[in-house]
Amino acid sequence: MLPQNPPKHLLILFIVLTFFTSCFGTYQENPFANFLEHDRKMNSKPVYSSFSKLVRQTKTSTTTSSSKIVLINVDDYGAQANGKDDSEAFKKAWDRACSSKQSATIIVPKNKIYRLKPVTFSGPCQSDLRFKIYGTIKASAKMRDYEDDRNHWIVFDNVQNLRVKGGGIINGNGRTWWKNSCKINKNNPCKDAPTAVTFIECKNLIVSNLWFQNAQQMHLTFQKCTNVRALSLLVTAPGNSPNTDGIHVTGTQNIRIRNSVIRTGDDCISIVSGSKNVAATDIICGPGHGISIGSLGAGNSEAEVSNVLVNRATLSGTTNGVRIKTWQGGSGYAKNIAFQNIVMKNVSNPIIIDQNYCDQDDPCPEQKSAVQVSNVIYRNIQGTSASEMAMKFDCSKTFPCQGILLQDIILGSVEDEVAKASCVNVNLADRGKVSPQCS
Ligand SMILES: *[C@@H]1O[C@H](CO)[C@@H](O)[C@H](O)[C@H]1NC(C)=O
Image (cartoon, rainbow, N blue to C red):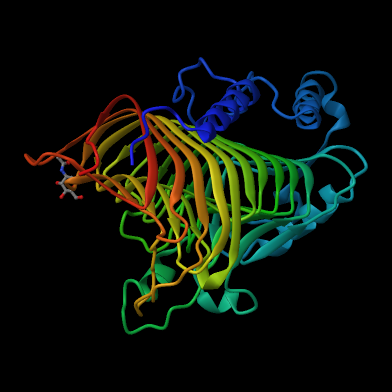
C-alpha cells in the first residue's frame, strides 16, 4: 500500500502542479481585505491571453473615454423597485445594451430592491457588456412564476466579454422552495428548484463583488463556459437550506474562483463533469458540505474532470472538507487534482474520496465500472476532524484510486479520540509528516 519510492505518476503530478503554479500564479494581497468593495482592481497576473486582453481593455476604457460607454439604467426602462415585477424593464435594458455597437453598461441603482421573475439575458451581443448591480435583485417567491422552467431564475446565455459586478445583492428568496423540498418535508416529491444565477456558454466572463443570498437551490452555476473569473463573492444561505450549493462548475474550462466566502446548506464549491482547469484560491467555506469534485458518474454516465487546484482554503464546521465523490457504475476520470494549504476546523470528513456515493433512498447495488480517480495530491492540510475518521479513501474495487499523494497532513480529532484514516483500494504515497496513518 505504501510504496517506498514515489511512483512514476507522482512525477507527472509534479509537472501538473508546476503548471498550476506558473499558470495561475500566486497572490500576495490579503485575501479578505476590501471585501465587496466596488470595482476592485484586478492586479493579478493574466492567465489566458485573450482573456487578459479583455481585462486590459475594460480597464483602459474606464479610465480613458467613459463617454464611449453607453450607460443603461434599468430605471429608464421602466423598473420601479416598488415590490412589483421589474422583469420587463430588465429585459428591455438588456436588449438595448446587447444590441449596442459600443460597449454598454447596465446599471441597477443602489438602495433599491428590484423584483424579478425568471429571466434570460441572451447573447451574442454586439459588444462588451457590463452589468453593474449596486442595489438588490430579489426573486419572485411565487412558485407558479417558474412553471415554464423550474431550474432557472436568472440566466445569462451565450454572452461573451461580460462583467457582472457592483457590490450589490442577488437574493433568490428561497424559503418557499426550501419548505417544499423533499429533503425538508419527506412527504413531498423530489423536484428540482431553480438555480439563482446560471451562466451558460459564456466566454470571457468576470463575476465579482456580489453577494448571493438564499438561492432557491444552487446560487451560482457556470455551465459550458470558457475563461471565467469569479472574484470576491459572498454566498450565504442557512446551513439547513437544502441543496443550496454555493458555486457549481459544470462543463466549464479555465475558471478561477478566488477570494470568496461561501456559507450555505450544501457544497461551497462543486465541480462536475466536463470541467477542466479549475482553480479555487482563498476560499472560506462553512457551514456547508465542503469543496467537492462530483458527484460523478450518476446513472452509469461518463464523467471527465481534470486539472483542479484548490489552494488556500479554510473550512469550518462543514460535513466534508475536500471531497471526491463518484457513483458506482460510472466511467471516465477525475485526475490531476491538488488540494493544498487548507485549514480544517471541526470538519466531519476532512479528506474523503467516496467511490460508493449513493444519494438516493434506494440502496445502490454493487457495480463493476467506476470513474477512475488518479493523481490527487493533498498537501499541507491541517486542523481538526469532527469525527474520528479524519481521512477516508473508499475507492472502487475494480478501479482503485491511483497516485494519491499525502504530504504534510496533520489532522486531529476535536473529541478526545485519536483521529484515524481508512484506506480501501487506494494506491497511496506519503511525504513529510502524515497523521493519521491508514489503520
Ligand atoms: C463540531 O461540530 C459538531 C457537529 O458536526 C458540533 O456538534 C460541535 O459542537 C462542534 N464542536 C466545536 C468545538 O465547534
